[in-house]
Image (cartoon, rainbow, N blue to C red; front, side, top):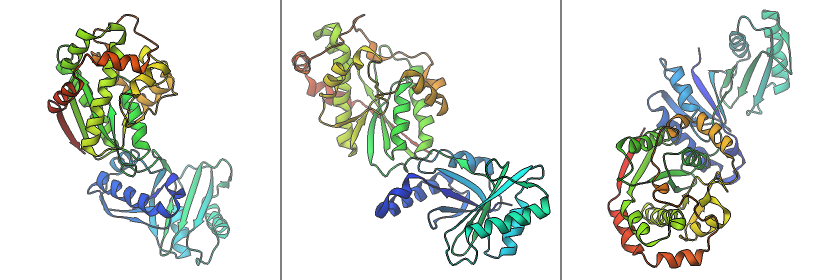
Length: 384
């Protein structure tokens, strides 16, 4: 019965003169995600309309559209004419047999259409009531028949399916996201994609403690996240030599802080190579010793690049709920050796001074260590 999908967006509609830029990017992302499951995808009067092939896979389309940032909701619809009798017939056919109450919700982008939204609601409502003998309930109807009148067509449907909202991936440039095998960093990456960023991942590993399974776990996490953007790149950065040098020269209470500073310095080099705009971390204030406000200040001063921490004010339970929703939680809780915890003090420093930490780093050949790590990095590309 359904021959099209009507896609609605939320925030994009507030973008004024830049709105078409966001709409075009959303159309591009929809086309990429749906691949060969459509005839056309077009912008049309504040909505995007997908014309479907005859033998489309509804469940597949539903899953894919539910995971595209920029879409607020979408509906499988009957694309029909502006003929009133045809609209009545189609609306009636979309009322389920066992419905006890209904309402009609019309909108009219085409102001030349002979009936106002109010008149259309009444006319279609009366037609359904006369034929189905069910009551109208404007507040808590079991079924809603939606009618959208555009320049040349009507679109009629009975369900709105929620999607992710936010902005289309790609409109906010590229970011480098530090991803571990834990719960937080995949969620922070998800939120950056929601704000329209294309996320490039950087994972740091120590081959003396990180097993093959640990590496595969991180790759699996990135694979799960890749469904939200159609091109994904992961940098696997060796960190063992850097840690050995830090362990030789730095008191264990400050090693975690310097580990993280080196990660940011390396991420900044990747950012420059990728022409990205910011580095993303999964930190939230005071969750662990390295995430006190004092230590975060010291860590972030390792780089001049913009640092974004989308989870900074979240508590752990909030992060876990999102991780479960986006299907990364079960992977994140699998056993994993975190290189950041390698040879650090039982009670690491919670207050640090950037100048003192910089003095500690003078014992290290930072430039050589960073260049060596970048040179030995391996990149993996995932294209959905």
